[in-house]
Amino acid sequence: MTRLTRKLGLVAGLILTTLGVASAQELKPIRIGFQSGEINVLLSYALGSGLFKANGLDVKVSQFPAGPAMLPALAAEEVDLAWMGEFPAVTGYSNGLPIQILFMERIDATNVRLVANPAGGIAAPADLKGKRVGAAIGSTSHYHLLRALSQANLKASDLTLVNLTPANMPPAYIAGQIDAAFVWEPNAGVIERAGAKPIATTKSLGMITGGVWVTRKAFIGGSPDTLQRFLKTWDQAQQDYKAKPAEVRQYEAKRIDMAPAQFDTLIEGQTVAHPTLEQTLTADFLGAPGQELNSRLMKHLQGIGAFLLEEKRIQALPGDWTGLFDTKPIQAYLASRK
Image 1 (cartoon, rainbow, N blue to C red):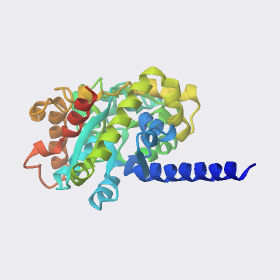
Image 2: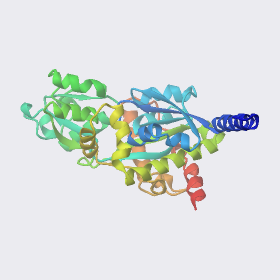
Image 3: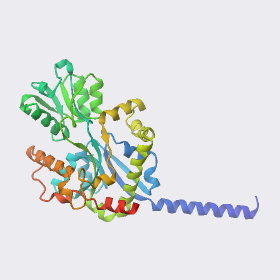
Image 4: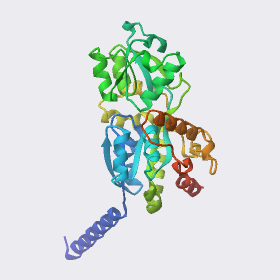
């Protein structure tokens, strides 16, 4: 190797190193929290495939056992974005936490199910009278159960309500400590594989439920470019899921240690829809700009607020519900694609 060749090699190496450092410096940090006991296909894909990094994001992920556990992390500014159910989002906002819902990431028709032991003579919600039923008090599990009882002309006092976390419902059922449970995947599926049968779902009860992305108000105002990169990543993940579902699902299947075929069965049992960012700005979700209070999601969340107040999970309803949604980041992203 000549002296000139060596010098050129050193220069090229220096340039590549410099570019690598610059590239790393350009990555925007973002801290994401999510429920480890929930199914999140798109998040696992975006993390595992490197899609976040490809869009200029340096992601730090924190796992939480349930949505309410993320509220202190948001309050302490330890998390920028959090994937959770509607109940903790309404709870946090009602308690004055400066958070907002960016969009509904997932809407489920049959993910949340009332599963019961057929050997106990339970074939319909009306058969729950006198039975022991597991539910997570103050959560969507409890909310669904009360709706099912109401439609069957039963009251909560007509049965024994056993307050359990979702993860503790399968072992309680297997041990014979409860006769039925209202819970979501993957725990609903575990109970079914132990012999339980589904007797009610979100869809059969005429309800809606799903997961929402919640963020701190300060993050929206202080990191607009980072948020746009996140929305771009999510938009791409949704498109990839439609084009190559098996490839996208593999990351979440691996996370929860399920074989692909078994995971496909779980997904089918959820009957999940992932609203596009365009659909977010319609009356079925967050509503068109200026029409948020009239949206289906807002009315659903206000119903949850009334339930939480009645159950003494919150002290008062929000004085102004309009601040719960912020669709401006999505409006800006959609405008940038044109």
